[in-house]
Length: 291
Image 1 (cartoon, helix red, strand yellow):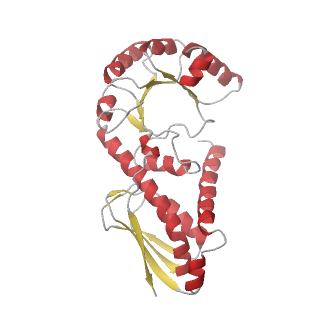
Image 2: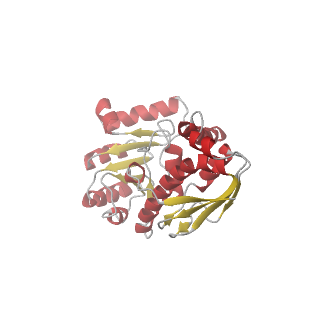
Image 3: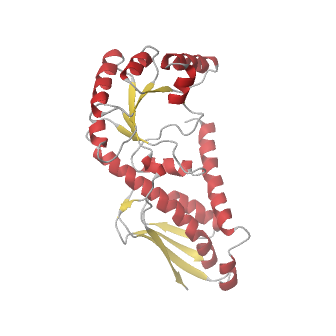
């Protein structure tokens, strides 16, 4: 990752944290302002209520620091750790008012991210005996893509392109508008060369005929979209015989019921939109003790 791109990602994260806090408190937490003395100190504990993979600990620290740099944090669990019901994740002490203002934003980030990481880990475990990797998609909550994709990585998956700028990914509408897979790839390769872009080119194919067409133009990755298991087996065998180094991705209607069979066809990647568009949050709670 280039320094410029890493700065962009860091900026996405920081802006989202500040925006999340601003949308919650706006002109102030009037309930806390009305009932809690600014000098009152306390201690809070975040615990897991269900089993899963923890994600968002680093983000939680950033939220607490943004609310009050004087808060003292101690983590018992870290991103990527498996947690059981009742396990303590984080102890934080300091201003009660700051703890209350940060509470919901911290839990919102951690619960969603942990839910994504937990689901990703479940998929990764199903295909651990193969050479395939689980990929995310761009089917994320607007403004939260950094966190969704970070959670996938924490769960053992890999990140597909972050946005429209870091890969040329030719989908069905691009193909239809260009007239064919071959035309779309020719234009894409020309554009990459002309602008001296250091990006990969991937094209979707919907049939074995389109796969054969794609192989003539040497993309970096071919996306086999909505192929049956039998079609995937034929596609992988054919592609490996023609272009052994070509990376193959399977996508479309992937679930726990078929991900193992898909991985066993020999594809390199399996992209799953469900990881980030249908999240079941991991149940976490924060309890405050007053001093």
